[in-house]
Length: 184
Image (cartoon, rainbow, N blue to C red):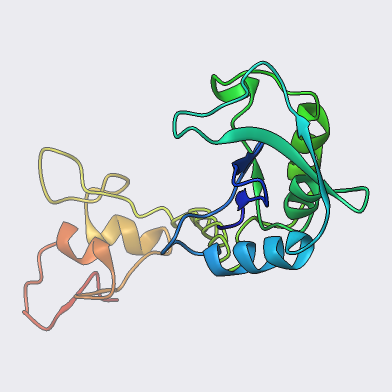
């Protein structure tokens, strides 16, 4: 039928215990179904009762499927075509091979290989770069917080200040309107 359901020669429909494969129209459906046919079609199989639940809500027998000594459900999990599911972890009954299926699921390649790989994590934000200290004029007015006049600023080795280049330009009055203050 598909990757986790088979019809047997007795006419019974079997739901493979402890696994889940994609449904018709979902990514991986064709691959899982093809692999199930490859492993089980026209072969003698042993159906093994899995646990307390023996029939699902659709009337299918819930069984393990062993072909030529191989656990077909486990094989599908190991190949990334099925996941371990419908067990005690998600509200169904415990089954005898549950621990082995869960371990195989954790170690198997990404289930349903046609799914896009997970996007890489975003690159970390660059650390903020320290900004150079730019002195601000005092709250009360437009004068230098260190020096009261251009004469004092020049005497201490500062200036000239150019409009659009030096933030200190706005702290002083440009008497000749040439865009330069604290000229020597």
